[in-house]
Length: 182
Image 1 (tube, rainbow, N blue to C red):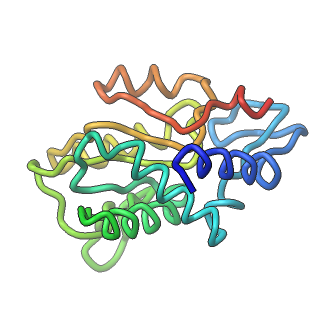
Image 2: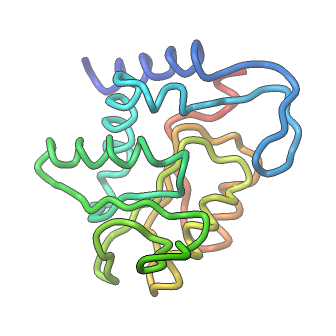
Image 3: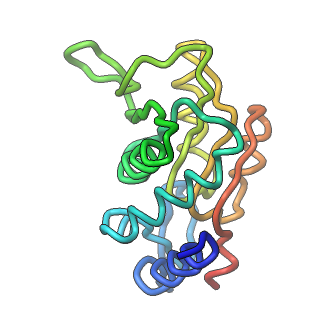
């Protein structure tokens, strides 16, 4: 299956399984008449494979050495992209960013192999709305003197995330825009 065919297949699965109309309150607090629950797809075998493959392709021109993102939306995607990077012969470090530092153990906010200033970090998430989760991830990385080269998501709701990240000096790329599902 070509990359374009994989993207079409992922779109079809997202549209059928993750998209719904209704009355929703988003994590940003905003109201919406539609919802994209990408976890219904990223947590399936085929969805994880397609997300891993396509996100890996989307960011590989940035030559990433580390890929991770905010829990919970990024969790299944991080593992999938990591596996694809290994199959591609360019394995990356993978990491997850907690909502807050653990209150026990090492008290870490960023879980995974140690990241360094030399790493080319990509932050991923399933859906971007206002960019709040991405900004949290950027801030968590900044505490360790790190900055991502790009943020990437499956779906950009086009509700301010791109602008919020640009204000932090980090571009946002996406596989899809929400308008494609409406």
